[in-house]
Amino acid sequence: MNRSDLGSAAPPMASRLLPSLLLLLTVFGPISMDLYLPALPALTRELGAATSIAQLTVTACLIGLALGQLVAGPLSDRFGRRGILLIGVAAYIGTSLLCAAAPSVGLLIAARLVQGLAGGVGIVIAQAAGRDVYAGGALIRFYGRLTVVGGFAAIVGPLLGGALSTVADWRGLFLFLAVIGSAILLITLLVFGETLPAADRTVGGLGRTLQDFRTLLADRIFLGAVLSQGFLYAAVFAYLAGATYVLQDIYGLTPQGYALAFGANSAGFMVFGYVAGRAAERWSVRGTLTAGIAITGLGALGLLAAGIAPMPLWVVLVSLFALASGVATASPPATTLALVEYPQIAGTASSLLGMVRFGFGGIAAPLVGIAGAASILPLGLVTVAATVLAAVSFAVLARPRPGSAAAPGLGGPSTTTTATVTTAH
Image (cartoon, rainbow, N blue to C red; front, side, top):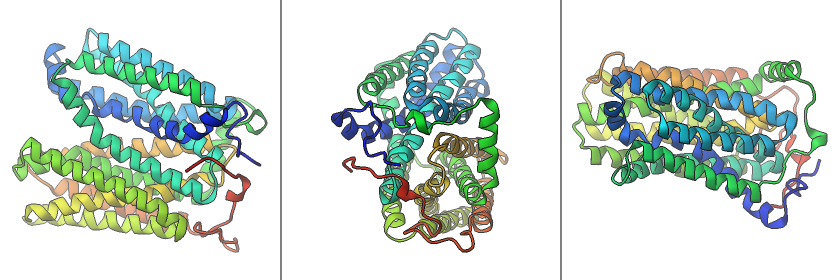
């Protein structure tokens, strides 16, 4: 089927701008977790909440991001991408305003959950619409760009939140998120033409959705790619949860020093994500994914060694850098493997991928604090275990099907020739 027109509703200029919008859609959900973190202590004091309760505002957003993708993906396969996206962005604006006006921490937690649900819509639509309009090497490059933008958001979110905190309180930060959502809504109305024609949509209600889920989960290549991503993201979320305690409490870095280390790792995430997209296209999707798991494993082993015996700071910094860069390397090829075989249910496939990424990450993050803030060992154990499970999942489940013809880069059956794209890259 030919998708070169990017949807019949999209004019030429919108077609050229669509890739940039899809990249932007991957940012506004995750940045909701990071932007207000610098103001979290002030929020805790103003609402009279315990620290552990206030931190549930982060957890609620993370759960919402996972569940939002699980719901929005199948709905977009049935009703089209554009309408579901507009509803999600509008809900994001409304819940951001509700967060800004929340009179109690309980209401704020509930609003953050719904805000995460709405933010997850952008992530899943970006991945699914990318599968609608890209094929072959262009699809791999696109998922590489998504990884780069994710790393950029990780850098910009806390820094922008810190800068805004000097001129606004935590309620002002949520108002800022509402402004961002409003801008994205306007751009979406102007740029986003429907990428999934009515003839290609799924039919049926919940029964069809459950059938699609069963189809995906019965595909061992899809399952291997998704599980490997889930375990790798468990490692990176463990890093995000534990690195601040390791670097500041154990190694004595100042907040500025920690910010520099975090920024370097996020830059590595961006660079390696971009390189991985190119390597997967020109060399091998499976080979690039394997290399990503191996790099992540080296970083995890370095952290485990630092937990077993005292290590200099540079060992920990290099290990954290390798961990983040390895996950970034594995992300574009794994996403390609998971979605390339399912153009007509790309939303459903993308929703499972996103839910597993955020769900596994949410489970792993609290585990690094089991031994308190004075030990690196839990971080090392969690990241090593997660990487081993990622490697086993990929090796056992995602091996090529016997007798299949290898598509360039994919090492498996070629289905990417079903679409062509004329969008400027």
